[in-house]
View: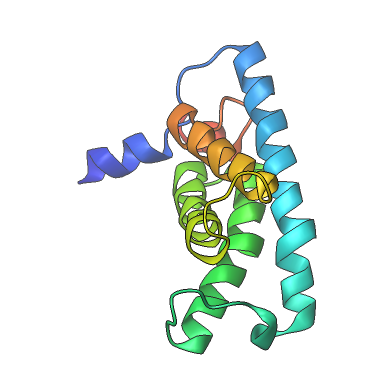
Length: 136
């Protein structure tokens, strides 16, 4: 179990170009989530967050805020990157497939956010991250 956790937190072995590319992707997608979705939902209040699965109201609202604010922040600095992208992938996937119906035509932003999270999850954060500093 410990080996699994260490591997999921590992930044992966990457060169400078790949690490810089992963940093740019991490920043672009996480800043988009944070400033276009997370902070506006925080300012609007919990009642403004849609609940497509009809879960208990505060649970889904808090989960959404946690993923779009805290996990996006973790992704910016590259801390627990694979865990953060897994949570963001779940949230974005629920929005894209359940709430918006999975149509790429009208929901390109959510589709590309989901693909970006999956790429970051697979590749890791790169060497320009807090994860790399922790795993030296």
